Length: 353
Ligand SMILES: [Zn+2]
Image 1 (spheres, rainbow, N blue to C red):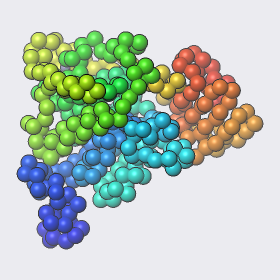
Image 2: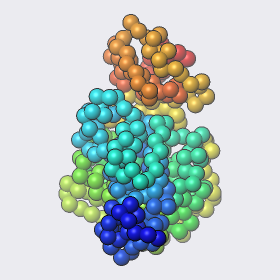
Image 3: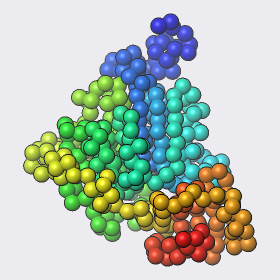
Image 4: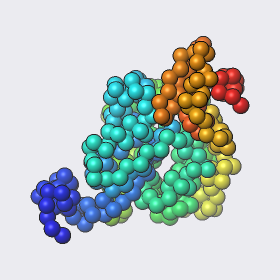
């Protein structure tokens, strides 16, 4: 191959030169990274750091998925975004794609503004080599776990709260999965602390997301043997790091996913389209069978009802004490309540049944 400033594998001039000098990567590892595809589910705090790192590392195709739009309180930790993105009312996936395209124009970036559910997960994971968890909830993580095991795709779990975080790499068939760790599924609502009660510090996000991105780089560059076999737990404020060995779990736990090949989240037997959003005083409502909504038409209908604005991606309505954000697929985030019934009432009143 001829060497030129545009050759990404040129050890002298490539943007990846320093990375290729790291012996486990080298030219071959970089070539594999460039030919690889990663799915980043959630483009909030963890997803921002993960996507940023993987785009700069030259992962050839990044598929970014996020259901939410930007708010000012995201900027403390969601490193891909700035005040202009918040002012423009952009969905996170779109703002992330815009930013990453300026950082690395040589890779392909896809952005999807959707809620990941059992109806769309199979197409989202189709063709990807690794799945990165940037979500903020266990419902979605168990769905990812089901999909990863069913289709044999490695995935990297990460979660943070307060100044604490944990991460674990799942290589289907080789290492324990999330259900080996939690056979009953997610902890019931109200048991675990949330961003609401515990807050969140940016440094723990950067630590956990960096480990996740590093695991992805190992897997994608052809070194799955170097992936972590432990659950890593950081309590950053107290300077505690623990690594829990998981090797014995595969034998000791009769995992319904690994051994039983049962995937209830993927089959739609567990999980929900409706969610109280972590730390947001908001409820998400989804209507998977709904016809697409014309945002311009809806904006016209809502003139005089409250303060309405819209762009290509979403419509906003502020009325009474509620802030409604409506997406073209009919999905909505109702701010101002954590009561699902109340959110449904507000949706029916302004958007329709
Ligand atoms: Zn398992």
